Length: 118
Image 1 (cartoon, rainbow, N blue to C red):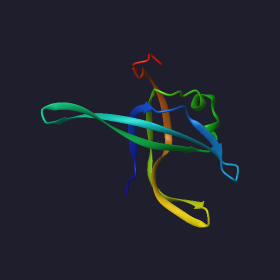
Image 2: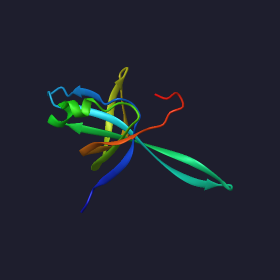
Image 3: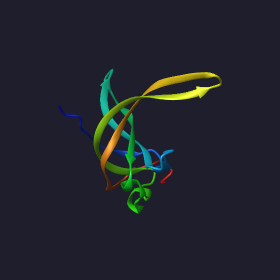
Image 4: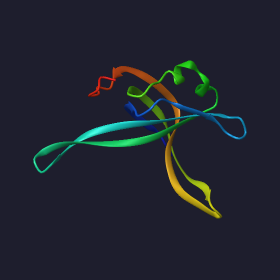
């Protein structure tokens, strides 16, 4: 069996770092990939957002924390499906989450072009 994801895309925001209640370091980043599709004789860009998560020592490096919004990245990892639970008032609510558990995250040399020049 094989569960492997490979993406090249752009970060939507800087890497977010936290720790679990058990003290494990966790970093999260959203990565956007785009493709062009033809609809009614016009080409349109379709963007998909991928939630990526890193655990442990790699999340604490300066390399990971230096990844800014709009950075082109190469991501390798595996797909994970789980349920997120939260108490809302007295009711426990849960919803499905799909994310990529990252084994390798590398910055590429290309920066995303934005209208504001950011």
